[in-house]
Length: 515
Image: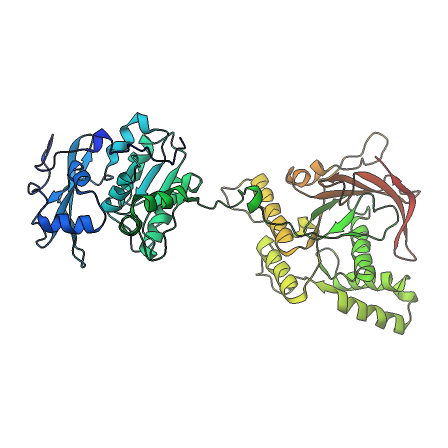
């Protein structure tokens, strides 16, 4: 028998039954301003018209009352066999409610949660007692109702309205499934939100009612007990972000992996929208030149649009590098027509992110950077974003956040931008100061040498170290040291290159040699 399938001989748990009339004494005295009378003919007629089993309601302690005059009933609330509250309601079209002053706010039929024989059943929570009675009548035994109906709006704070939840959760620690059968209206949606927030969405299901009905008692009246069972057995898990079954998995958009156009690099580094790449290396060893060349080749050969946030080079330096690449010679050797052609290309393919130099009050922090990154995407439809270098941003973190936590959160934010907008993001990050070895040479840094956090080694999709061990032979090692997807974007390996000052680009000296 499945947990959510009612027993054919289902009846309310023994602990839920109370005498049909009279009040119960407690240690503090009596609760209830009056005894409940037997249900009168009008009570019975309306309850029967609702499809409810009147005899079962009597077993649950429901009785007649003149508390609100008119066609009124009293519904006792029992805790561990003792009546601690009574709710009074009319059965007329204009429903009116009241309850005992000083009564305790507990779940209606809450004692069923004390029955260990029902521990494997889901807990069904309704918005009203007659809805809970409808589920009991349909064969479910672990059914409760909230004491005060639905709130007018959803509340994120705990407050006193939901004081009963803590006791309920203490009684249901092993319960993996709560079915929230609240009303199908705006107030019911608020109650659904509040209960799921406090119970935990991962443990909650919600129900969908047939057209023309809004609660379980409506369903009982229109479609009898089987209709109620159909509603409950088809309850669906509340969605939890990031958790999917096979048929729910959102399709992953295919992103082309572009060649950088650099000979020997394709085996190790292909550019794919949505990836986050870290490039590191000792200052002066050529990492900015490498990143600039990759971007220029992508802009020239693949027509990708590039946003450059370069904080160490001024405007003239940045434009000089781009013009030289386009002209394949130093700017001083370019003609006016060549410079004009280069400028036209730069205007069509590049966007520049620059702080306002004369605004000393502007904090060039991560918020500032990501706001500009979003603007570059929305207004210029960029494919690649370069942040060079990370260390030049103003890194202001809250006092209760460690440096490692801050870097982790910052990288997560950058990665989210890359994935959300399908932008290839390259972050250039300096390592901490490296010490020379006994041979007088500075060793090649690792990702763990990047200042501030090991997250730089753990979080990127691909990571590159640019290093020039010997300046006498001018050979630069471009080492891909990490790749999350070796089949799509390249496997770790090293390419040796020589910087060509005249043509302002790298010439590959030793193709695709594996580390």
